[in-house]
Length: 370
Image (cartoon, rainbow, N blue to C red; front, side, top):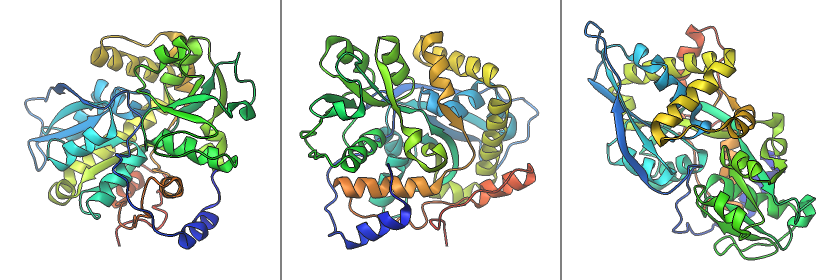
């Protein structure tokens, strides 16, 4: 269970600085490459253009990116952008999306906490800002019930995570540490064998018996359950108030500086999309599945999407304190040098949008732009 932030800070302050490993901290996508496909939304001929012709947004074909899936599918983002055209690109992992942001191929991205942290720290705080939240939860430990019946039974077993140093990998390594077990972070060898496996092939690895379980995001967790696995732990239970950031919204600092009106429009679209999702969960689930079918060629069956959808909370709050804790977990695991995350958040545009919508403002846990 994540320790209180004060305890984490004390322990880290006493620790010797660790070298930054040549590891890409990634998000919870299905693979390691960007998709080639992108699409542009239709713009009304008489719509008023903002300060740029086009805004390019990246996201994953993943239920934890429901805000982007639904906001794009339902035309909510485009409506807020008016005559500025929305162009979207899909990614399968955090590193490729960060690379696209740094290469000026996208302007705004929906992405997990670990690549956000890595992108910010590698650029010495100059590449991106987190400007909003999107989703919490949606990560589970699922296991072979014939081999594993309790959490203590994980010792000596082979458990998959999506990628070395990714958000789920860090969470699992931290959980192992809290149990008092030892695992070498780089090799995954120890009291538990941590097997880094692409989410696309994890179900096949489970069926073949090469893994005994997995700590994975949705819908991979529910796909495994549909194959006979059993949910043993929902990561939400390890966090205060059952909340932790799984997806947030980032923007390149250059785009934020040059086109604040466009950023504000995208955030309005995000807030309105989140309100629609939370008010219409069944319609929103169907909309997200329609978007996934268009992007991947296959909709999720009910036995997968129904439990997966229930485990994800859509939120405007970036849950900044939990991102800070996740960074500290990566440091403790030896995957990250202790970072200075001051300035990673700029929530002023979001709070302006929330205030206008009559919604409560959100906090940056002291990690905002000074």
